[in-house]
Amino acid sequence: MGRTTTLRGGLGGKSATAAEQAWVEVIEKMDETYAELVRYEVELEDKNATLEETQGFLASVLASMSDVLVVCDHNGLVQQVNESLEAIVGVKASELAGRPLPSLFVADQRDMVSGLLTRVRRAPLHDHELRLDNGAQGTPVSMNCTARRDHRGRFAGVVLIGRPLGELRRAYEALHQAHEELKGAQRRLLEAEKMASLGRLVAGVAHEINNPVSFVYSNVHALHRYIERLTEYLDCVHGHGLGAAQEALRARLRIDHVAADIDPLMAGAMEGCERVRDIVQGLREFSASTPRETRPFDLVPVLRRAAAWVARVVPRTLVVECDLPETLMWRGHPGRWQQVFTNILQNANDAMADLAAPRVFVHAGGDTDRAWVEVRDVGPGIPEDAMERIFEPFFTGKRVGEGLGLGLAISYGIVSEAGGLLSAYNHDGGGAVFRVELPMTEAGA
Image (cartoon, one colour):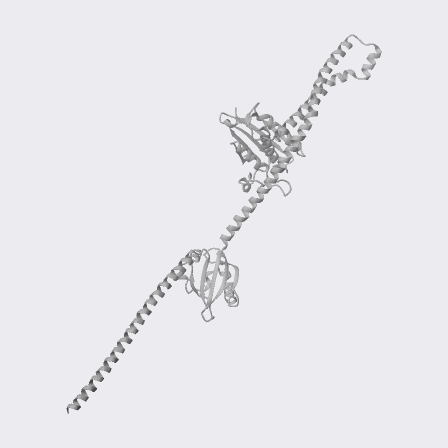
C-alpha cells in the first residue's frame, strides 16, 4: 500500500510540472504577442504621423500653386481640385467633388473636353487652350492632361494642370513693351547721332557761308557810300549844264533812271545780306555744341525766324499770323528754343495737309508770373485717342515714311528740361493749340 501511494505521488508531481510548463509557455507566447502588438501599434502611429505630415505637405503645395489642378477618377468625375481653380470658378472644392469634368468648362467646349478624356488614355495632351466656366465669358487656361494609373498599371483617372493665360499674356505684354522700349532707345540713339552729325555739318556750312557773306555785306556798305558820293558829283555836274553831246549820252545811257534805281537796288542787296546773315546766325545757334548753356535772350526774333523758315520750306502757301510783343525775354539757348517752335509750327502745317488755305496763328505774352507762347492751326484738331500720346516718342498720325514722330517729343523734352510746360488742346473755334509756358523766374524779365 505504501508503495502504491508513493507511485501515485510521483505521478501527480510529474503532471503538475507539465501543466506549469504549459502555462509558462502560454504566458511567454502572450507576452510575445503583446510585444508584437505594441510594436505594430508604434509602427502604425509612426506611419500615421508620416501620412498626416505628407498630407499636410501636399495640401500646402496644392494651396500654393498658382496653376489650376483637377484630379478625376476613371469615369471623369472630379475627385480633388486646388484653391486656384476654386478662385477662378467661384465654387468650393466640396461642391465640385463628384461633378463631371466637362461641367467645369464653358458650354461650347464640353464636348471637346469629353473627347480629351478619351484621347488621354493613349497619350498625354499638352497646351490645349480651354476656358473655365466662371459665369461670364470664361477664363482662358492652357491645360495639360495626363492619365493616372494604379499600382497595377490600370487606368484610374486623369490629372489636369493648367496655367491661366492672363498671367502669360501679361508677361508677354511686359516683354513686348520692354522690347519696344529697347528698339525705341536704339532708334533715339541713332537719331541723336544723326542730329549730332547734322549739327556738325550745319556748323561747318554756316561757317563757310558766313565768310563770303561777311565781305559781301561789308562791300555793299562801301559801295553804298561810294554811290552817294558819285550821285552827289553827278548832280553837281548836271547842275552846271551839259553840251548837246553830253545830254544825248545822258539820255542814251539813262543816267537819271540808273541814279533813281541805285538806292532801291542797294537797299535790296543789303536786306538780302542781312537775311543771309540772320539765317547763318540761326544755323550756328541751332548747331551750337553747348546747347545746355542758358542765358537771357529775346524770344520774338526767334519766333519770327522759326515762322519764316517753316513758311519757306513748305511746298505751298502757308500764312503765319504773328501777334507778338515788341520784346519777350526768355531764358535758355536760342537754337534749342528755335528748334521747339520750328517743330510745333511744322506739326501745325502737317495737320492742315488737306486744307487749301492753311493758316497758323502765333500769339505770345507774359505777366509777372510766367511767359507763354501759343501756336494755333485751323486743321481738324487732335483726335481723342491721340491726345494722351501726342508727346510720346515715335507716335505720329502720318503715313509710314512721312515722319518719325520725334518733333513734338523732342520739343516736350526741351520745355520740361527748362522747367516749363508744353500742353495741347483743341480750340473751340476749330484746330489745335499748342501752348508753351515758362515761369518768369526762368524766362527772365
